[in-house]
Image (cartoon, rainbow, N blue to C red; front, side, top):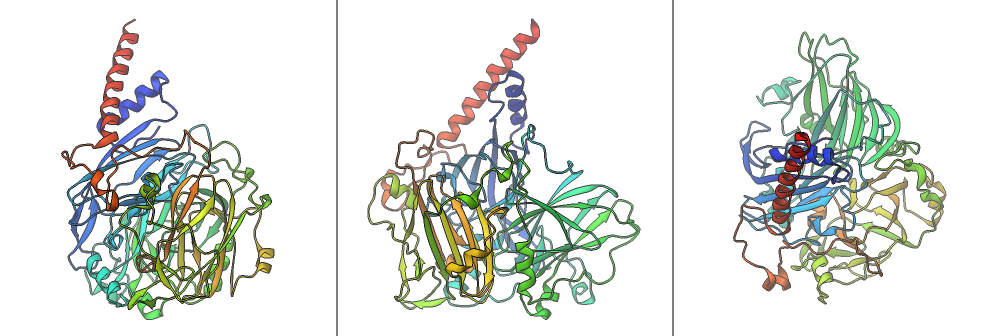
Length: 593
C-alpha cells in the first residue's frame, strides 16, 4: 500500500486496517493543504506565485485505485479559491469537482475539505485552481493513482517515478493577465517555458545572459524511470523530448496505451502523458530535457524553450551541443498524425482486472449527437467574449448543482443547442441535457486559428477521429471504433474537428470547457447535466460542509473554525482517530494472547 505524506497517523491507520481486514480495500488518506502566495524567480525576475504548503509546484497526491481522499484546503490567498482535479471522475459525486458550476468558492481566510474516492481509476493527472485566472500563477500539482496490487502493470515496475510540469509562463501576475483579457488586450507570447517551475538551463549564449535556476533530474545508468508529463500551462501547446533518449508511451490520463517509442511528443494544454525512459546512454555527460512551443514563429520558440537537465550519477560533464530537433514548427499534420497513432491497449487491465478493451464502445448505438463549434473572440454587447455554438457562458452566482439540489428556477436552462444556431451570439447559462446511460457523440469543430484543448469533467471519453476541414456525416467512416484512447482532454487543431464518444453513466453536473485559459475565462464552457431518473442510493448527497452563495447565501453559517477541519470531514477525522485507537487496542490485545 502507498500513502503519500498525509498526517503521520495515516500510515498507521492503513497498516491497522490491513492487519485487521477492516476497510482494507478502500482506505482513507488525509491531507492538510495551505494555499498561499510564494516568491519565485523563474526568469530572474522576482514574482508572486501560488504554492501549496510552501511548494511550487504543489505536492504530488499519490494514492491507489478506490482510495478515499480527504484534503482540507486552507485559502491564504487574497481572493476566493477552488481546486479542480483534472481527470478525476468523482463517480456520482460532482459536489467535489471544484468548479463554479458545482461549488461556491472558498473565501479568503476560510478552509474547506474535499472528500472524494478515486473510484475505478488509474493513471496520471493533475490538480489546479479553477477560478480567477489563478492557474497562470501556479497552484498546480500532480496526481498519481496506482494500480491495486491484484492488477499487474502492463510493463515492468519502473525503478523510479518522475513528475514533470511543463508550462508556458508569464512574468505578469495572474491578476494583471486577467485584467488584460477583460480589457481586450492579447497577452501575446509567453515570457518563457518553465519545467517544474524552473527557468531554462543556459544552453545558448542568448539564454546564458540571464542567470536563472534550472531543474535537474538525477538518474542511475541502466535504470528505467516513469516520466509523468503534464502541460499545466494556460495557452501553449508544447513539444516534449529528451536528448538521445526514446520516450516509450505507456499511459495517458488513466488509459494504458499500446506501447510505442517516440522521439518527441506534442502535449497540449491540460493533457497528461506518462513515458518509460531507459537510461541507456554512456553517461559521459548530462542530457537536455526540452519543452518548446508549437505552432509559433521560430524566433519566439527558440527564446522560449524550457530546458532542464537529465543528470546520470556517473556523468563526466554538462549537457552540450544544440537542443534536440523539434518537429517542423507549423506542421499541424505531423501533430495530428502523432495523435492518431496513440491507441488503447485493449488487452491490459487497469482499475479493474478485465481488459480495457472489454467495453466495446464501437458497437453501442449513439443516442445523442452534438456538434460544438468554437469561434474566435468576438464582441457581444460591447464586451470581448468567446462562444460555443454561439453562446458565451455566464457563471451564475448560485452554482448549478446547488440550484438543481434546491429546485431553484432561473439559474440555468437545459437548452444548449445540438448545433450552432443561425442567430447572433449571446450571453447565457445554458446546460447540455444528457440522458443517463445514454451514449453521446460530440464533434468539436475549431473555427479559431489556434489549437484548442477540450476537457470534460466526470468522464473519460473515447477519441475516435480527427481531421482537417468541416465535419460531415460521412466523416464517421474514418472513426476508430476499436482501440481509440480513452481520456478527458483532447486537442482540436485550427480549421479541424475531433470526435469523441462518451457513455453517460456518471450522474452529476459536469463541466465541459476549453482548457486554454483565456478562452475558458471569456465564455467557452458549458455544463452537462446527467440525472438518474430513479432513486440512486449510491449517489453522494450534498456534503454537510457545503459553502452556500448566491441565492442560497442565507443558508451559510459563519465558519467559526477557519483553520480546523470543517463539516463532515471533521467528523471523519475524529471517527478515524477513534477507529485507530480501537484497532490499536484490539491489536495489542491479540498480541498479548
